[in-house]
Each structure stands twice: as C-alpha cells, then as structure tokens.
Image (cartoon, rainbow, N blue to C red):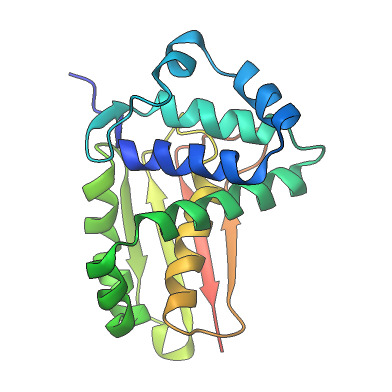
Length: 191
C-alpha cells in the first residue's frame, strides 16, 4: 500500500494558484512540465480524496522549473502555499483561526499534517514560544520535492491570520539542488 498520499485539495489549490497567477503562455509552459497522467487528471481531482503525492510534487516541480533563480522559486512556492492554505480555510477554520495562538497551532501541527498527508511527521518545539520563537521539524519526507517552501506558506498564512506582526519563517534543508530532503526545519519568529 502506498503511504505517500496527499489530499486532493492541495492539488486543486495549486492549480487554482497557477490559473490565477500565470498568463496563457506561462501556464502552457507549466503544463508541459507535467506527466501525461497528471495533465490528464487535471479537472478530475476531488478535494478530500487521497492521491499519490507525486501528483502534487509534479505541480510544485513545474512551478519551481519556471523560475529563473532559487530565490524566485522559493518565493513563488511560498506564495503558492499561502494561496492553498487560504483556499483550504473554510468557514469553520476561519472561526477557529480567530482563537488560534502560536502555542495551540504548534500543538496541533502534527494532527493538521496527518489530516492531509499519509507520510511524514511534523513536530514543534514549544520551549521558547513565550519569547516569540517557535521551531518546527518536518521529518521523513524524502522525495516530497518543494514541500518545504509550500509549508512556509502554510505556516505564515496561519500565523498571519493570528495577527502576528514582524513574522519571519526561515527554512533549513531545502534548496533547488535538494528539493526533497528527509528533514526540514522551520524557525519562526514574530513580534
């Protein structure tokens, strides 16, 4: 049984991001990076169904491949993650986010991850949260290319919805040369 699964809404949200932000020429270049299986399934994904994460990874690889530099790829993937998070935030989650605190978010991140992914594990170090410092660790995600910058987008979206100012989320472990490392670290600070 394949454990490398992700929810369809991540794929749908990524395609919505591409459709909204890419002109026809760039969108066609993006589509040309996808395998026939993924290209043929666009439009057929269901939000809560499970899909092999390679479908999501191909979309992220396509986005990264269209960028001129690693810095541009990082920024574009973070924006994509923020967009997917925003689309995934339904009415209930909007209400929940109003009472969310960094501590509660950090405690819930393992469950949030597992709700949408069948592999990998997220943990959080709360030892310095009273100093507005939070460290998260996403582990056992080898081959989940570009999920690091996308997760930065998810994290910054959530923290922004909490009203945190001066937010900084530094990612360690990801680069274009190593887009899918086994472990990723997120060092988050705010004012």
